[in-house]
Image (cartoon, rainbow, N blue to C red; front, side, top):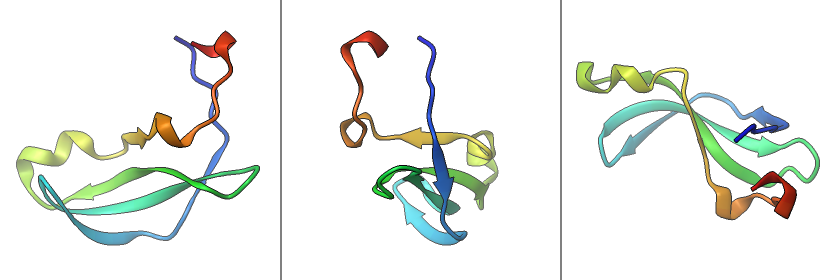
Length: 69
């Protein structure tokens, strides 16, 4: 499924997630500025390093047309 997303990021923020401490950047819609997810910038635990640079997009917070599904 091709995914076209127009987002911008907020500032880096240290956050304690269920899998441990991470530095994340919130993702915001470029059109309405609503939060739509986050990007992993840095994982503090070695076992979580695979997440660095990856994005979490909360689909419930996006507006998808039926054509995109």
